[in-house]
Length: 161
Image (cartoon, rainbow, N blue to C red; front, side, top):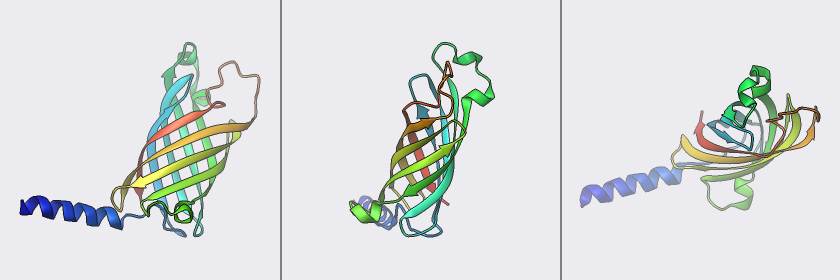
């Protein structure tokens, strides 16, 4: 019984020391699944804190497969790279110090868009995230299969660097 109490106390201590966004100099790496109508793929992103509530970064996604016709797409059609800006609001809404809500804008090779994401950290270095992405302005409206100009959902793991 003492061992169980010790484990619970240690876990509670490690959970309480995690912080979702620390401000200037904070660095996050995220990796996860990219889910959308025409394709499912992988997503990676990196964010760097510039101030108490501001971060910038890069995000990339690669579509692996899904709808008919996507298997014939080349690398350039499956790949997207984005520069991103986030407003980290975790300390503003003050739900939990382990939680961060971050709306933002991104400029990609395929479109100009927005995103809304949330992170929750279980320990100082590890957590989970979810992010919804949506295009605001498409560069090429004539694409037949346009897998990067639609609503997408990212789910995965986040790490403090």
